[in-house]
Length: 77
Image (cartoon, helix red, strand yellow):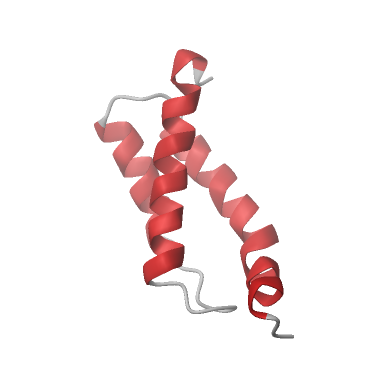
């Protein structure tokens, strides 16, 4: 689906999620949909393939990992 654009798509999604996690994420229960909308919009604006699919995959990954990883990073339970 992403063809030769895979690295660029992953890079954009990674940058957007990283920025969100470092500036707005406050721990479990604060994962917002905004960065994932931004991913899809940015990919579409750049004419890259698979914006909605990449954003959905990122949401699924974040739901499975971010809160759990936050707890591990901060030592909270």
